[in-house]
Image (cartoon, rainbow, N blue to C red; front, side):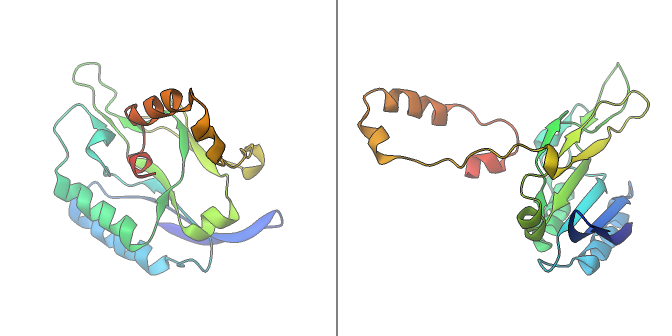
Length: 187
């Protein structure tokens, strides 16, 4: 792991932690502990980037054997303990594949996580999962805030409920199955 404070004349300083997690389940505990130690809390924006070498959800893997829930639980516990959030992403969903045509396996191993101070400082930031033709991992590209177009805030207007067609349009939207990050269901 490499962690350091990035100072820029164009933004507030932030802590960046980059790493490659071990393939060993037991050795990843050391990395989680090291990341907990460098966690600035919400005193400074923090971006955690790397190959976590584990999944958060069963939907993060296609092909091969299912990932045991206990393996995902330690990673999710680390995220919960450090109050990290997953930075929104676009592009490909899976970030690793075994590059085989017979029995292909696709996983979401690489991620960018951030804290609440990051969200406050870099409100519209996100990353792109790009294509890769030379590696079984895909590159993650942090999108500068200046590239983002801020969307207007959604405001519900009570008078909409009085419009006859409103409910026939509104209800099917919420009945549609949710795709993507499971937190969308909560929202």
